[in-house]
Length: 111
Image 1: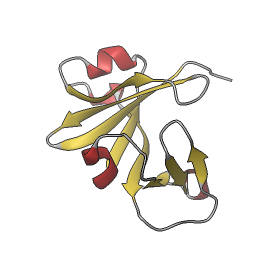
Image 2: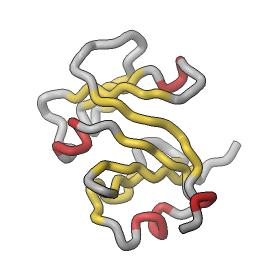
Image 3: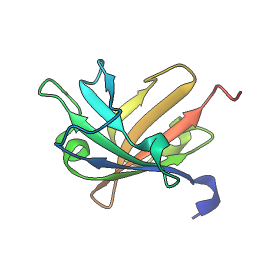
Image 4: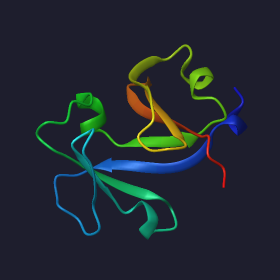
């Protein structure tokens, strides 16, 4: 296994508490916070009642890795969330690895 192709980006932890500086993502009915507030990129996610993301993603923490090609990274894995673009220049997908959600992120907008 080539661990160098997976570059740590963040850890995402589900919460039910409303936190400071939450950003709302209407397409997913979810709030995120904390990512830019600590040097370890710990992100908190709070999900609304209309959120249609898989239950496992809403209940278990996930680790996110930057990859050069999301489509190559997801090959051979059970896909939880198909590749999508939550904002310009970013493609993300979630897969299941050892019964845990893992996120792959591809940045296509390198400024």
